[in-house]
Structure formats: C-alpha cells, structure tokens
Image (cartoon, rainbow, N blue to C red; front, side, top):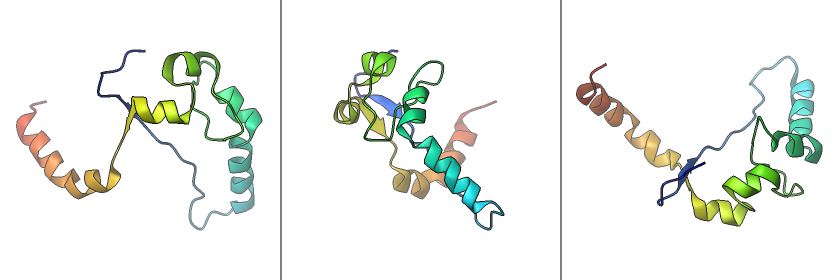
Length: 103
C-alpha cells in the first residue's frame, strides 16, 4: 500500500435500514451482528481489510501494519471527503468533467 504524502483518501461506509422495509427487525439484527466485535475482527482480516468501527476492536495484523495502528493514527494519514463541499459543487464538477474529458 502506497499513499501520497498528502494522505490517502478514506472512504466511510455505513449500513442503513431502508424506509418502509418489511423486515426492520431483521435488518437491525444484521446491523448489530455486523458491528459486533467478533465480526469486526473477522472483517479486518484479508481479503476484506475493513477498518473496524467498533471501539472494542483493536486494529491489528495487516490493517495495523499497512494502514494505521489506531483511529488517531488513521486520522493523521488519511483524507476524509467533505461531503457538504462535494454536494455543493457536484453539478459544476460533473459539467466540467464532461467538457474537459473526452471518452
């Protein structure tokens, strides 16, 4: 893993329950399981290499070696998207991209 000196882009992911879902209880159960320390520890391993979001799970193995040893270290090394700025400028950026990039 190689990152630019300015920092690599970090992507935040999330799980949501769809509005009017017929299986809200089951969806909530899935979220609980996905956030459990046991599952978070497994997802941290290859081939997934997902940074754990559960504070009870310590970053270790390849994640700690390659990405960051903890969340403080990760915040220093990575750049997180400013979605407010992105959404405010998205239309103009897409227009510019479409004018300047020929596919």
